[in-house]
Image (tube, rainbow, N blue to C red; front, side, top):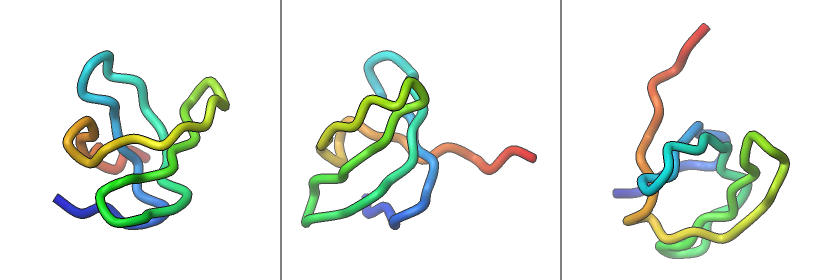
Length: 52
């Protein structure tokens, strides 16, 4: 599964939500809702549906 910069994702293990800032192969730089930033593997992420 590939994600794009700007997409909203959730972390599969705990449901935390974040936005993709950068992509390098199967690794994604995410800024999480608590403003923590980390690199995560694609397998640990789930795409969130847009909410308005």
